Image (cartoon, rainbow, N blue to C red; front, side):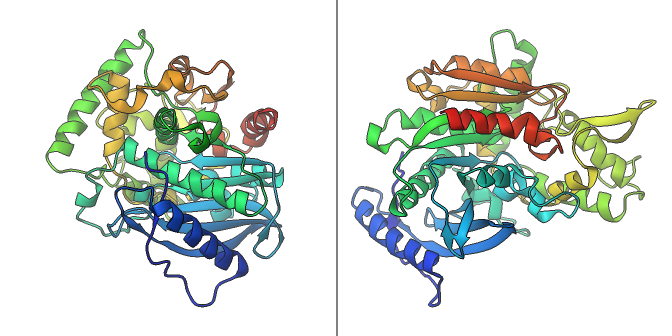
Length: 437
């Protein structure tokens, strides 16, 4: 697992802010030194730091990091933190690194309220944590910023759990190094992964056990509503996963490396529910655009391809009268649509193939070979209407002795981050655990 970067051309603009310039100098020195340790000798570049106000004294910084030779081989690091004054974040003791799941990047998953007028701008977990003294970092995996209109996805051929896990390692390395350089200490970070992001985080931790102690970056692990493997009794789910793996692996072998433009469909679903709610849905014939979006939210498993694995799985719990959907139970309806619009157009298929292999139990993949050597404290957060209890078996494979669970009744998979009451039901328990670990 190569968590160090080699330095190519920095390519910064001539006029940069103090934080940007300092990041440039620090990165150049640190990455130039670490280049000697990377046998691959791949050149990397860092783009300009960007800054935007989220709400009050909470600001988001973003850094583009080139992690490979291809034009799409880039990740984006996000940092959400309180500021003392422009480009000067407060110093913090606690820090977290967040990994998003399918479809939504960091902003859509953990900062979606900043792009919606339906809810207060502070109704996102990243803001909640930052306001309470946590330095929040996160990543956009490579596929998040592949532009709409792309037709050749051959560059995604080797994008899988292992590659995304390595990118998370790069992000952790840079985040920890920058915190240390700016006087926040050299402490390890709590790693939170939601949905497929939890699988990527599991894969990273599995690989990190093979690194020396001084190169390990994680102090605690919070997998959110995701199964890494199924318990022996989950026979129907395992069989569905095996069938799904067979289908996707065959498509991959035939040269399909993108997952079906799901993000573009969700963008259209959310946008049409906002702009033309009563018109007939193209995506779900026989329904209006609003009905189609509500049905996707409350019965997400029906839309899963190649076939549903966890029956009843849904993103947002619905409300119904006399069998007809009338709204959402916990998440503001317009906020849900605004979040769908934030979906990334495309996603690589490799991590999906790997996840189905893990769930199926075959073919053998290397992402669980060292789980018993993972000893960090763990908090599992599940939603009863999402993956819920299916995520518990993966915990039993870890070597951790400090393992806690927090199950949220009635919530769907995305309600954990979108619901109006998520601050008390989900985020506060997470923060309490982080403060105690």
